[in-house]
Length: 109
Image 1 (cartoon, rainbow, N blue to C red):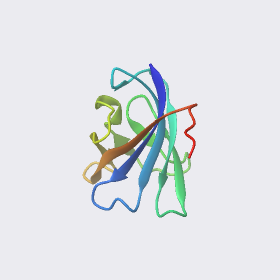
Image 2 (tube, one colour; image 1 turned 180 degrees about the horizontal axis):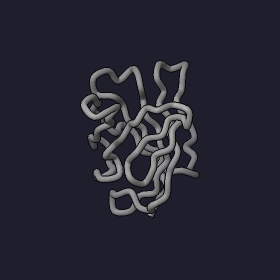
Image 3 (cartoon, one colour; image 1 turned 60 degrees about the vertical axis):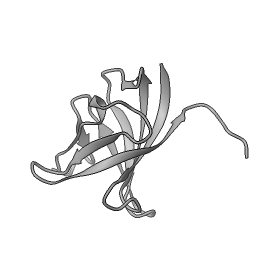
């Protein structure tokens, strides 16, 4: 079991809406039924923090009625893995995992 920081990019335009989330994984799968925290980096200057609920809901802000969802918890966690983020019932985007870094480790250089 390891704690990792996952970074994924929007496949349509990897320069916007980068997603970062910290997860606990085991055997390539997300483990634990608790909520986790992450953020969308919309344009390099504006970030939207979120809570990823155990049922796949993405809560951006308690004051906002947006109902985003993702299937990230159901995919194998590895570089190149693809998952969906749905902004509503009909619109969404494909994301691809581009980086996994074990939390608590440092690399020099």
